[in-house]
Image 1 (cartoon, rainbow, N blue to C red):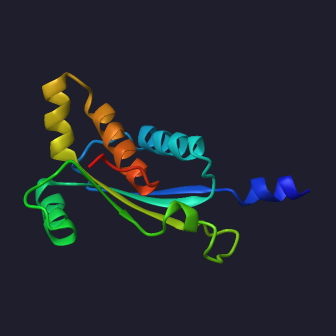
Image 2 (spheres, rainbow, N blue to C red; image 1 turned 90 degrees about the vertical axis):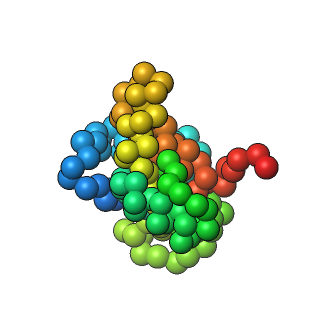
Length: 140
């Protein structure tokens, strides 16, 4: 019975915030994010994914990280991976892992440069940002 309740409680909720001018395969991005989370043993979580333009990502990069200029992907954690079970929430509400913000123009530019599909590049950026939220970081 406990196992059944655990399965019922588990939910990965991915919220997308994408300007309608950007043609994005949401289903592919959702599947990619779910696969990454499940691979890392996370089955009950919320994730926000925004796909934005050059000005918006530049503003976020400068205001939040104090880096000059635009970038390809940013991630903003709400809870560390270890804290996902620390916050008491109703079973129907998964804890918020964080936000991944992706630059659509940068994905287009990089995809063209390397002969890739834009959706594949968006998926790569999503994975990169999500791994940051899970605690994996660049080597200094």
